Image 1 (tube, rainbow, N blue to C red):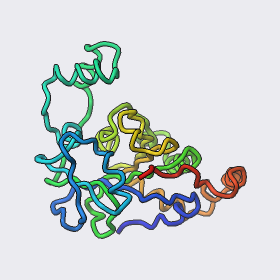
Image 2 (image 1 turned 90 degrees about the vertical axis):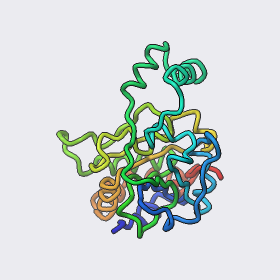
Image 3 (image 1 turned 135 degrees about the vertical axis):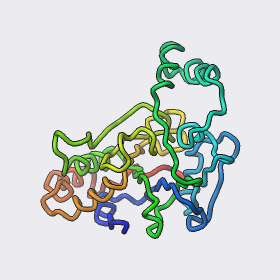
Image 4 (image 1 turned 60 degrees about the vertical axis):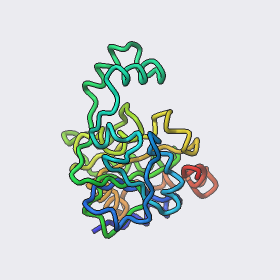
Length: 246
């Protein structure tokens, strides 16, 4: 059952829709659907998500997310190195770029349909990650929630890793079946579709459930005086710059 995280949304004034990344056998429950055009960036669909539509990715129609989300190879290694090193300037040398491609993770789909868009409570079993688009103030509170239940010997609960925007939806997590959160939207190629104040806070399903538990604990950092001080400093709300622009 999808947990209720309404207390977090209300407390932090997060008005923008949360975005789910689903791996499902049937796309029909996610309608209305949109598909990428050509090699379109996944994040060009941001306005569609805000309007209640879901981006549908398959091996046939996948946009730029095919490599890291579906394991597809449509460019030669030489072309990829030339683009990422020569055009995007992501590594100092072609050799470093090539080595990164050797080590970079990929998401391995279970089903034929990947779906990115508004949360669908009745499809919770197929949910892999949830992304919150937040401003730095909201992010600071959510990161405290991510570490609330963890022991130093546990899997690192909070990460920030280099990778494309679509990689940060799922591929760069250590274990999607463990509680982990990622600070994302750090890919400058994808940021043009985001509000300049917005960062992504992407969580696995187990972390999503822990955040709901954290929110229900009156002793947690969601309810302490430090958050009250921050909210007063911001005029009573953390809303400013909270979400990507349509």
